Structure formats: C-alpha cells, structure tokens
Image 1: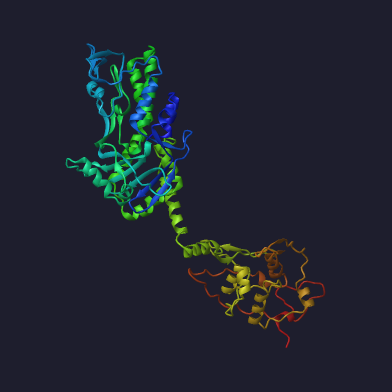
Image 2: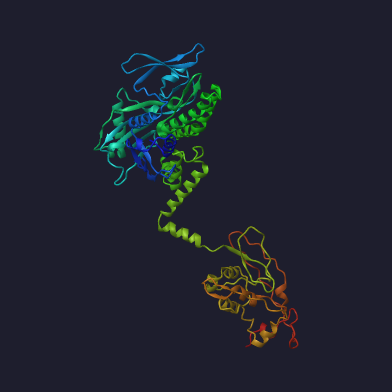
Length: 577
C-alpha cells in the first residue's frame, strides 16, 4: 500500500501521481472485523492533501519509478543487470560491482559509492559484511499472499480494505487491487505455521476455515501464484561502511503489517542523498556523511519500527479474553476519535510514538462504555434522567440574623450549625405536599421538628395552618395588635423580585420568609442562642420538647412604644373562647 505520506515524498521527488496511479487502486475506507465479536468501518482522514490510499501492483509501481529515473541526464540505466560481487581496493574499501546483463558477459563497473537497494535479502549487505545492529526475533510472523478475482464485497456498496482479526494469532487482510483483483493475505504468528511441504494447501485451508473470509471467496478464484515470507525479521543493519551504503529494506526491514515499506524506502533515499551531497562536493568526510545518514534514518523510522514490533506482540502473540474483546477492544476500535488517530499514525500525519497513549485509550474506553449505557434501553435512560433531575441534598439550615433569608445549604461534613431559636417538639401530622414540592428546605425543616413562624405568603399557607392546628393555644391576634406588636423602628429591608421555580416573576419566597419569619424585639426568646444536637448518620434525631414560654406580663405597653423583651400581648398567647 501507498499512504498519503509516501505520495507526498513522491511529489517532492518530482514523481507525478498519474505515472503510478494507473497501476493502483484507490482505497478510501477500511472495515475491521473481530471474528464475529464486532465490526467497525472507518474512513481515511485527509492527510498530506489526500484522503485515500493506493493498493499497488508492485511490478507496475517499480516500473513507474524506473521510468521516472530516466528523466535525469546523470542516470545511466542498466535493466536486467545482475550484480554478483563487490570490487574493493587494497585497503578493503568498496570501489564498484561485478555483474552481467541477462545472458551477457561479466562486467566490472567502478563507482565512488555503491548503494545497495536490493531488499531485505540484500546481496550488497552480505558482500559488504553489514552487521545486524538491532533486531526483534521473538514475536515474528509468516505471511502468504495471492491475487484473486470475483471476491464478494464485505457488504453491499462497500469498497475498501478489509481486516479480519481472530485474536488467536491469525489475521487475514484483503485489499482492492487494479483490474478488479483483490489481494488476500494471511498473517500468522510464525511458531504456529506448519506448511508440511505444501504452502498452497496451507494457504487455502487457512482462508477457508474462517467463515467471514470463506463467504467472500466462495465464488472467487486465485489468479496469481502464491508468494510468502517465513519468519519475517524486524531490525536494522549497519547502514554504511567504507565505500558502500544501504537503503530501503536492505538497511531497515520489518513486518508488512503496517504497510510502511515504501515510505521508509523513500525517506531513507532522501536522507542518503542529503548526507552524500556534501561528501561528493568535498565539504565533508565519508565518515561524517555516513554518520549523518545513520542519524537521519533512525530519526525517520525508529519510532514506527518500535510501534510495529509492539503491534505484532499485542495483535498476534497476546490473546485477549472474549470479555476484553467485546468491551475494551470494541470500545476503542469503534470510537471515531481512536479510528482517526489510528489511520493518521499509519499515514505518518502524527508521530508514531505515543499515538495510543494511556489518555487516548482511556478516553476511547470511556466514550465506548457511555455509548453502551445510552443504548441499553429505556430503563437506563430513565435512571440517568432521574439522577440528573435529583435535587441537591439538604441537611440543615444556616443561622440567619434579622432581615436575612433562610437558605438551605448542601450536605457537607462540617459540624452542625446553631439555630436561631430552640426547636419545639417534632411535628407528627402529615406535612403539606405543596410546600415540600416547591421548597425542599421547608420540608426538611418540618421533618426535623423545626417549626417555622407562620408565613403570610401564599406558598406557606399550608405550613401556617399546620402549625396552628398543632398549637391551638397560640391564638390569632387581631390586626391592630399584630401591627402594634410587630412595630419596628428600623427601615424595612428591600425585597427584590426574582423568577420563581415555575418561571413566573414574583416576589421572592425567600423575601417573604424574611419578612414574616424574622424575630422582632418584642420576643426575647427568638434571640436565645441554641446549639442544635448532632444528627446521627442515616436519619433525623428527635428533638427534645422545649419548656413553655413564661406567662405574659399583665400590663400593656404605652401606645406607639415597643413591647418589652419577653412580653407578648395577651391576644397572641391565648385563643378567645
């Protein structure tokens, strides 16, 4: 495959896309299937100016690059020439190659530098004695592939790549190719592959034992010879030595699972060109040029190499339990953000290192779990709505001074606050539903045995009637007596207007409570400090009865004066009749 990242390098090298797209098939979508557990589809995001990949016929692609090289006057092409040996000087430095054209006589060609671009089994690397400097040989795979015709689509209307994973050491990958063909690839952990001298039989048995793949190949036929690589290594060789250098798979080879071979070869050739230019110009030594190339190649490729090795271990050699596959793996692979990052990492649009770090994985898992909750059904949605609509928990009232509103506070671990007055005995009569519904704080006060003074507002009428029914000995005062007893020389507090719970603009109920509940100087017991007993966890503590107030003084205050502290008019302490 050719990713947009490789196409961008080809653009930089002056290779026209039209020269190789004729022998390629455009791929803009992928399907991922986990052996019956779940499936996911993803679209290629826009990277490097393109939102598609190419499935290429390597023979046609290599021919397009060969033709492009002929545009340069400094290039002499020798097609069909086979190198068999390296030339060296007395000091052992490589000075050229020995080879022959197909069916021709042996020739010797000298050069200032011999570049081996002859693949992972490079003859130049072997003849030059290039050592392997880094390799991962434990978690390796074996790959077989061939082209097919008549392959059924993954689903009706879908055209793109298809990855079928088993989670048990075997993946099968299908990619569209030119001329209506499909490349069918088996990718299996190497220690479980046993071809028994019949690789074709092994290949057919492998693709047919998976129902999802067998369905697609039911009416298809294989139209190319089978190719394969056993125990594919992953590593780096020495990239340069006296008079020689390696590029592409000859220098850096790895598993094809990520499809990075073409990109790595292109950026490696670009890095070698940048390193050799000052040496050819006489501005740098050979050792300096070789070191520069080595450093640039590692910077371009090593992070992806490490990620490829990690993927092999994770996707072929680790075998997650079915529960993990159906939850964590599924949540990640169906997550659009995770899909986007996965394809951008393959397209080198984001750094390979850390593309799926803990934060990325955790967020994908959380989003996937939440999607499952939302799809669980009406009961889950009802429970979620109930949780969101639940009112804040209130467990006590704050102490207030005269003229302030009584405000409920949220439950906390702070010590109980003091109340402005001593609570009377607990109320046992049914609480008015209207006040509870509109003012949870008032309902809690009634449940805890805290009797509030009678409120004259329309909301607290039920509470007022409830209080009077509980204490009939506290009679109703006449209007004149009530006005005289509540006389206060201070200016009345400002009561603003706000929008009530039902959306209507009206006088704030809190202001109404402040106006009617505020203690006045005519009653000293309203100002007696009292510490509320601590409430036990899990319920309300009964409040002890409060002794009755002292009898009122017989004399009445003079007209226009304030009643002395501790004295109440007789009309407020006994109901007439």
